[in-house]
Image (cartoon, rainbow, N blue to C red; front, side, top):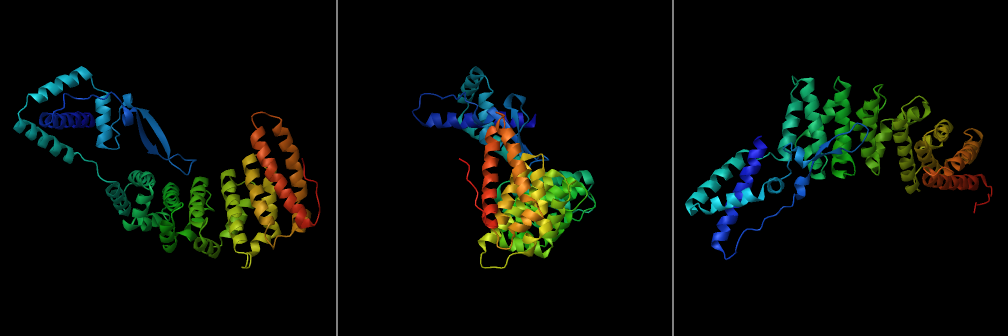
Length: 393
């Protein structure tokens, strides 16, 4: 109700200025806009559990819930949802006011708008951070503060402000909270703020969060482990300093444990094998440096090959990408991949399954893409074995 009054005042405020300007100029009349523009769709951002990005929830403007991004969008909504005839009558009433009455009315509305002005994102973040610092805060209010930060850190400028406001240290402290849901969302926020953001990555790493996140990725609470791994990936991918700290925290052991465990949640295995691919690619770029020994470990290699047996084609594709990069490393032995890991058998089994999928219209394009990748892996594999194979036409 309050926002509707503000929207009405905002519209009236604009009319008074337009009329005042009209009285000072030779313009013949008002130009009315019937466009709803920003007000057509009101968007609020809320996090979705199985997504690393917050999903938009869209509301039609007719189901008005008071969510405006600016006074301008509020004005557009007010104009678009007003009766043009009544607006003209209001304009005529405004025209009857004297200059001193107009000025007085404008000042009254200005004062009201100032009192109802929304706080900045930085202010809202500071409020949430201060709440989290309160040890006596209820669990429900702690959830609320974390959810607010999860939304607010989406813009990169806000993410950069998180450290300045003391929020990163507070969130890392929350990783030790007794409640797994609190730990999960705290890791989620750190991951979102760090993703593709070298400034925040450096700050989070310097505060020692990575070792805690590696431990959390082994949690029995699957959702906590998934969000912790999301944060790890955000800190480690394309970040050499992050990768050194990852290895120092025995991150490769954590990876192997996830990949070897056939009962592990498939979402976690996808994240793990995707990170393996990225780490192997970084190793390839450092051609003059010694390769990490775990890349050539036969049990580790077998755990990656075994993922190609999954019924989930997306996991199979991610395993192929990892195998392609691993095969290009100097320390990877093709003979081990054949004799101990059974890569040749696994690739042939995949070829047969993909041929069946390519006959189905709904899966044909994707299956063809995966088959192309499988063929590339097979070519590299045979080259490493010193064999020649016929390239399919």
